[in-house]
Image 1 (cartoon, helix red, strand yellow):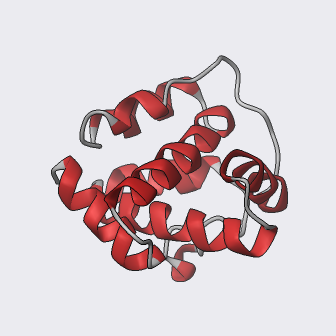
Image 2 (image 1 turned 90 degrees about the horizontal axis):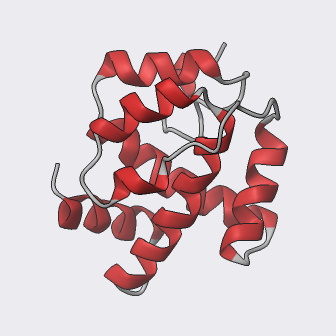
Amino acid sequence: MKFDEFLAMVRERGEYEDQEEARKITAAVLRVPADRIPPGEAKNLATQLPPPLDRALRSNGEPEGYGREEFLRRVAERTGAHARTAEWDASAVLATVADAVSGGELNQILGQLPSGYATLFGRPGLSR
């Protein structure tokens, strides 16, 4: 998937005004899982996303072990949104990620995360 296609899907899912808003939300949301999943997994995920999205997934080291609510709090902090809006933003971006990467990669990512994240990726049937 190309960068513009990715942003168009995020824009449609999130009902954002324009591509620029979709780009800002995407960059903010993708930065959060980079701190949550192991660096090797973040790198594998980044290789399946179009540049420059891969840069947002650069890890800062060892993953932090936090759950879905903390994930959404961090998204809200990065986007300047309320918690409910952060969930909407995260879902718009992560469901697009799920469509852009292989099923095996998605399973690897979800396997690294606690229960509850699969719904953010638009795959509630994969919840553990």
